[in-house]
Length: 232
Figure 1 (cartoon, rainbow, N blue to C red):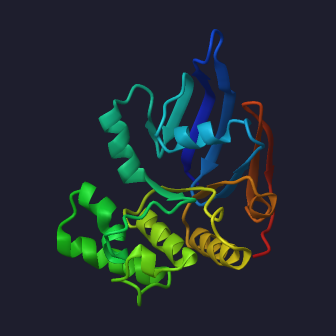
Figure 2 (figure 1 turned 90 degrees about the vertical axis):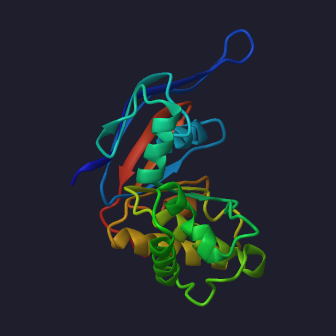
């Protein structure tokens, strides 16, 4: 396997008052292609900061982050934005769908930024919506969809650019338990198809379904535990 994520001594400092805060204090781990990983930790553990760094939404104060073989150290904002678009698919708790756009248009949006021609954008967006079970909802707007359907649209949008990494931040946080299970099973299915999936969550039962759990505490990795098998 090849590494999708390599973190080496990642530290993050935020100026706050006279002294400031070290949100991350030396985090190192590697995630290989095809892994299914849950990142957990209590409030203040550093997991949100880590998620922003993994997603190239923020940069570390110290350390190196290598994403899909590319060292992100010293990249400009424009270069980081391009890398995000090429290599990372994001799924958020609040879906972040554009209300005036249809499901098809929302899913196609990353391909606009990637410069893909319109006909190909729509073809790929439709294929991805069909893959997540929404082939009959292509022209529905977000307010015409259930919470689970909106999250499926968000997952389709995250995957349409064929990223190296699917990065989900509390993806079941706004869903009821039955819908949460449905979305979790979709992530498990995507991972079984070869997608590298990292889920940042505060829910122990979600993390327990991952192949691997990385637990943070006080800005450090407190535990990195792998499971031999996963009961779906």
